[in-house]
View (spheres, rainbow, N blue to C red):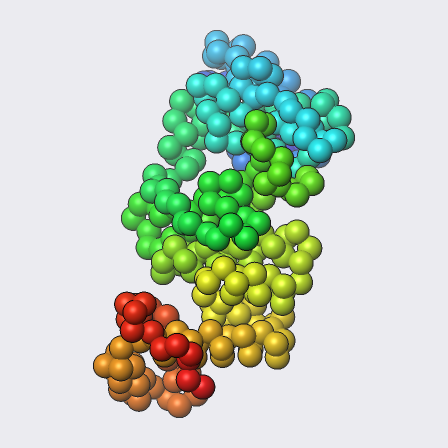
Length: 304
């Protein structure tokens, strides 16, 4: 339903009478479109919904409250909000910083109130967040992004692959781990990856480009952290330069030299059934899904 349709039906029910089911149905419809509706329109529908709840003898709609459901914090001259309490826990935070506490508070009330009254957050956050298994990945100290600080890796139940979710700076978190007004909470993977290293590579690439670094710089960082770059390049082919193609080739040559000869032969045999144009891509994918030899057997230098 559109906001105009919701308002028209609210006015009709106000004149003819309504049931509790009518109110809940329209409340759900309003929650679905509220965030995309201009702020000036909210009070009209909110007031009419509240009036019908009174007529139908229903409890008042939930309204998120500062210091109970969320707190405000100043960070790098901008104001942010963080959820808390029994309804939301610490699962939510503002995606952007605000110039004033009032703006941050308005955003928190808007978001959390809509979330709760939509029926998703009412006493059961599990409906919003699929059951998931979190994991950590250890990255070198040179990495400007670390698991559990800037991003989280997780695996969803009943779905294949590993996903990543960007995080925002927590109120008491050390500022030296963050750059200015960084906030990665709005970033997330759009698909699952075969393993945690592929998911972490995509995450590092996304966070680094979010900070304004070039595609080349982001891919170089991923490579320096010993994470695979081949998937990143395939997924960002429009921005790939000759430099990155060379980097991809060097990475593959190195990884290929660390596979058991028998594994190399198996891969070459397997791709012979494919059209010639598809063999290089298949060789890459199969190679990077194959575990290398123990490190003591690696050649001193990858042969070109």
